[in-house]
Image 1 (cartoon, helix red, strand yellow):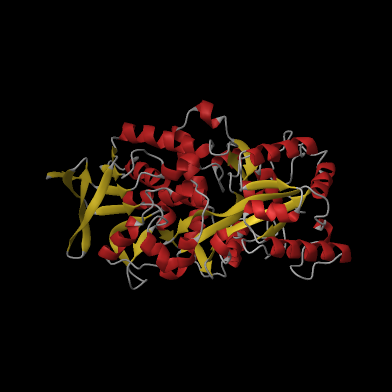
Image 2 (tube, one colour):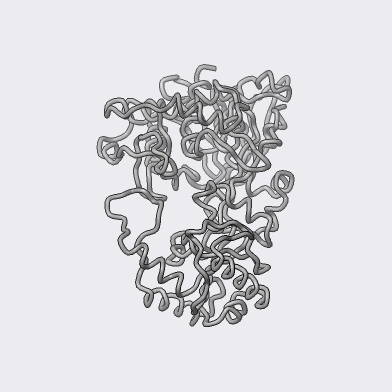
Length: 498
């Protein structure tokens, strides 16, 4: 067995792990190794696009007002003051500290790509303006990772890909190293300081069963947040080292219904109409449509979770489409980067042709039929029940109030003129979170929740401490991308000083 040693060992080369490892090496002179079981560097950060940044020099140089104090107060209210205010302050301010540090290593050409805008979901509330690169799944996340990888090479940080940790080594109860396997060969790496950045546990069925067993019965839309590398290795590592495992706050973020053809298909447009109704696989309505933006779009999936397979159909009719076409006629993207609101709908003839083409293919995910009965048969719902549901809803529209599910009256339009349309939506997820509770320096708490494990830090999605779980619903102080960058920066800074 080959034997190696280092000063700081990072487990995971995703967004937070790369930031932590490079930050720990930068200026400290310490030998840093990063182990990654996947075949590439960057993890989910490669697809991340929008972040919150506070108190950076970039913002100060542009005279952008700072909202950090008010933001922290608001987020502490949101989480009922159950979080450590020092950790929250460090994490929020760490976003700007990270960006200042990153700016020193980035090229002028890439720095010029950043434009002053709020985090995308803060646009409607005029949130903190900060540096953004507007490109869905092609934004600043990949830029950050390319800069980290380049800097890692300059600093001599050793990154081992396709490497799986097999055992955690301890001496007198403290972390002392790992044994790992790469290409069928075992190696022993001795080290006194560990940064755990292994990512989520969403692909670990045993952990999921303990946290949210219903999720295992759902038909969930596939996305990058279900990376096969997210197997919850950090939980077993934490247990071996005597960490406190924060089971009470481990949770999912659930969205939906997301168009089953994907949220960038031509049919996604029809899932955003206020006038459509939603029915589950029992052909029954179950909520006041639309759920978002009235509800947080990252919470709506918790409604679907209690309906068969987490599926629902958006239903609408020709007269509804004609109304939406009229009302959106003046809309358009133009120079506005606000993603909220509907664009101009295409002419009805184009929409009908789009659905007709899918009908020719035999699709049961999207459908267009002349009658409600035929529509039900096409999408596999009980025809009698669907006719009853639509009849009841149409009666509510005539009365002007929805006393079944309390839909906003201005959105109410009967499904009265065929053809009738359906678009299937599925449960989706933004990830699974929590496990290792960290202090303001990103040190991992021991089982007593008072002391910390010597030389052990954690960062990224596996951490608890920046959110609470309310009945399984995640209430957080920072979005995931911002937390990954900030917590990685903080963990690397602290580990370098250990």
